[in-house]
Image (cartoon, rainbow, N blue to C red; front, side):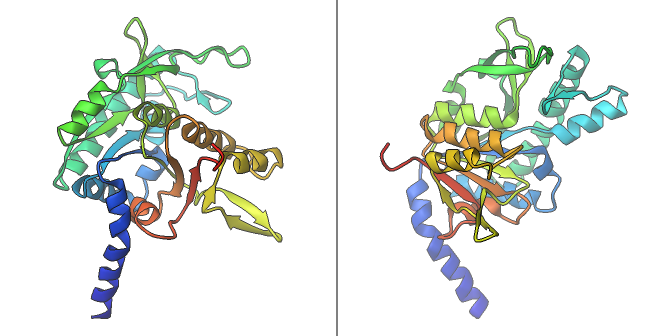
Length: 290
């Protein structure tokens, strides 16, 4: 009986958050590393639940590990510069095949099996993500790597209104119809900004943003852009966390109400973050004076 009462209490705790998010759009970035965890299915269950209770989830995914695996099988060497994949003609064909042809359809099928409607697309469909080739980085040509120029939200809006969950592969299309590989974090951020989403959620391999207090690492449950910029300046936020945090700042300063960084390796991370009082990660929200 106690277990049943605890379950009822959890549902009661979630109710005000469900009401607050009704008819709102939540963009979720689902990364390649998170897809390989034992809890990956619970993430898709969370996304299905969001749709069932009246929230409008939009799922954006990458697939770096699967791309690397396929390139290795085909004997194509993976090359990176400053963490960015150098994408030649042969590589972009594999990237598109893996992202749009395999991962995208697998995710879509798994969500459909949960009793909701999902449809898989990429940034190439209906010119959803218009992009251009990235500039040289330290004199290095990254090849078919894109920079988002415009997100055409009409297709996403139509799918949401028709009760679908859009599942979007992180590819863009150039003016002359070429496929361009774009970082999935960036695609999720640009889509969230264009949709003026209520929330943008990054599912990652880390718990969130930490700071040091009295010699101990403490998770920040809430943070503002000014606080995060200060932590970067103080050298507390470093390395690969800097672009992630800057993306969070960019989101809340350009139309997204809240941006979350949470650990996707935990069971049901989306539900725990947005339907409970304490949450499990870091939520970035705009400074009060803005």
